Amino acid sequence: MASDDISRREAEQLRELDEPARVARTFEAIADRGALWVWGDEGDILFTEDGRRRNLLPIWPYATVARLENEGDVDGEHAIRIPVKVFLAEWLPQLEEDDADIAIFPVEERNAAVVTLAEFRSRLKV
Image (cartoon, rainbow, N blue to C red):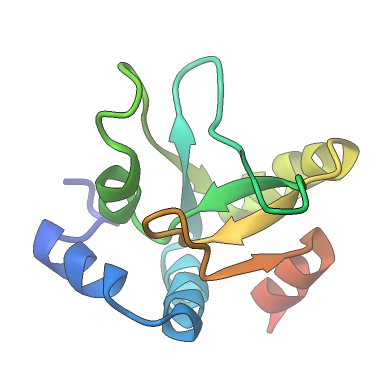
């Protein structure tokens, strides 16, 4: 387990939180640890769509919760740590080009929230 990760038991407890609490915990963890987690492999990152067919990048506050949500779906995929500075400087401009939004801490195909890139930037600065 990475030093900025949590135990499986803690991750399972976080997954039980209601949606507003998962959103709050995600932004707290990002602020505390200076990173967020996405899912993918060396060549691709997992994106999903909502009911309006909007492209979404799912993010998680810890690797373990990302693993609990995705592990076993596709061989070779794993949680990928993205430092916040890199996410803001490199990922957000690309997401903007791709017209994608961010899905916060999905659990069992339910997003805690979907935020625009501007909303995400704003929440990180608060």
